[in-house]
Length: 339
Image (cartoon, rainbow, N blue to C red):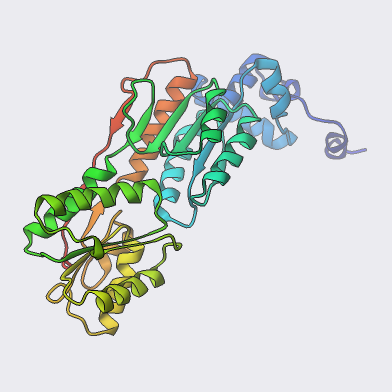
């Protein structure tokens, strides 16, 4: 029987890897679970042995033996939204080199799915948890209440001194864009939004506050729909607003997908932007700067949010105290041709 076939029938152990790499069992274990704590040369020898022997770590057994999991659970609302894809990629770049594997769950903006994912993932006793936003059902809060490992919240800022979070004020961002539009001379400013997750509603409240301060607020100029956000929906929302309120001179969309759809539709209608109607979005997706006219929007640094949150969680999982419990990464209103 060949050695390759023998290895396929007999489980390769970590001792085999250590022997092949010419190091102790402890060093081989550390190279796999905490690679940042060993030399590059040792890590390369161990990884070469792993590849040659076909070693597959027994995660469950290792967790039971060491009372330490190498799993991190990440729960986000969507993977079709580039905002969250950028964030998860940044998280992975921090945690994977440190020896952690990600369990990524998508709640599709549904509280019941958020609760289900929390129950399923926390049953694996992950070493840490990254969640999007603070709003969740009472049942989900109860599940989190029994979880004793570190939790870091993404995209929003909490008020409690006990919470670890990285994000920015969605309310302030919504207010800042509205204020800029008013400063540019627009007076009949509509707010259009879809999906209606908590962050969208916070932006809407920022819009309302500034419009009320300027004595320009009209509830009828808000178009909020629970429909799934998309470029096509943005075009439809533009049509609805113009049909119902032809006097509007600007629309602030709660995300760039909707705003881009509105720009496409405005071109079809031969509607001058921004001369007849200004259009603004939120998030500054890559396409925003390349549209014609280029899209005015709010720039959010979601990659930085993912990186800083992962670094914070890594410190907590190592038993260290992060320099900050609450990191406000801020935002930037980017004024371009569309407004």
